[in-house]
Length: 146
Image (cartoon, rainbow, N blue to C red; front, side, top):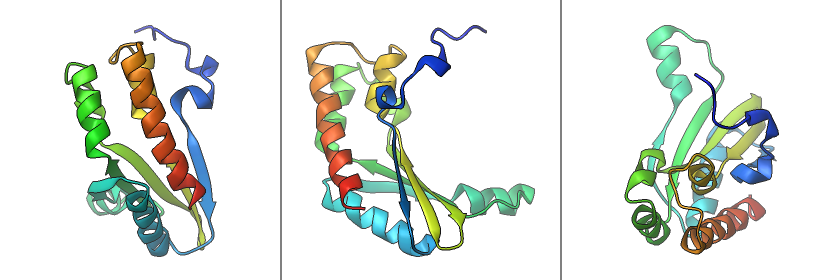
């Protein structure tokens, strides 16, 4: 299968990539990131630890890794309408936290709204541009407060 786009040509800004490092325990980082995203206007309806599951199921030996599925209901509703419900396949907007080393956590996020536009799941129109801008502002607010 040939990819329709060259991933090496994608600028991190094109996918809304955000990255931060926190100097705290993994558990404290999870609580902090959850609180910051809630304060920025997101809910967190889904969260789980892939590392715990993989370590239990296949003895993967993974370091702590946690996923918070953040969602702003108003923006999510608009995005579903704008994409004929297709964007739901990418929801929720995941924020991941992994332990780089004890006491040092990495927080990572990419924009599902931007990615949906890049791969053709969302229209390249003014309505979607507004949705991308609105979610970007919310994520920016959260990352500024990490």
